Image (tube, rainbow, N blue to C red; front, side, top):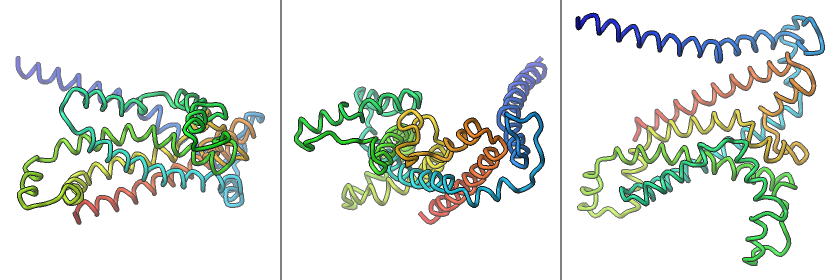
Amino acid sequence: MRWFRSAKQDAGLGLIAGLGLLLYIVFIVAPIFMSLNSSFTDESPLESQSRFVGLANYRTMLHDGELHATLAFTLLLAVGVTVMANAVGVLFAVLLNRTQLHYRVLRTLAFLPQVISGVIVGFVWKTIFTEDGILNTLLTHLGVISTPVQWLGTPHLAQFSVGVVVTWVLSGFTTVVYLAALQSIPGELYDASSIDGASTFQQFRMITLRMVAPATTISVTISLITVLKLYDIITVLTSGGPAFSTESTAQYIVKVAFTNDQFGYASAIAIALLLLSAVIALTVTGLLRRREVDL
């Protein structure tokens, strides 16, 4: 009877695992191979047939100035946001690492940006950044500025504004990751260091930062990947403007596919972005794991 129950439980788990694997293949693996196949053609929704063009789409990418500009902005945004979001996450996690009820409420609020839809985030911050929005009104009343600032109207300020918003969103995720890591650090380490006369800063540098190193690897890698494929927040916030200064590579792929009707070329860019993201993620993960060993 016990054997029958065990076999029944194993069959149920196998069924769930099989269903998960099937969904992964259908919605992740199959589209990647379909895009790879399309990247070697001149597929277009305006043409009934597509022709095999070999590596022509990949050669076109080498001379596509707009693609290079979007890639430069995306990489810059990924690096800047990853650094800032992880710094903010560590800071918030240290401040909120308490057991009282109000700290638990604050932890929930800190995670809130991560669970809000990117479209809603974009609309909310677009309202804040408008010329007569909350930010300009507040800064004017405080005497910081005399005339409203066009936060989304000039290229550099628009790029900065996008960085602030994406950092705000990702800080919710990084805060939770670092909080979980902090709560696994034995309190005896801090007690022993206090007896040895270590200051708060020395405890933070020698204990906290070293013990959260594995969490740093996870947080940095996921933050980079998230920003490299960012689309929804930027689309709502700036639509890639002004003058395409905030256009991400993901937005450019959609524009090439559905505005320029070049499915084949868009697929080639998507495959290149996928490979680039994989290389960056593997490199960063390897470097941070080596740092964990050194610590």
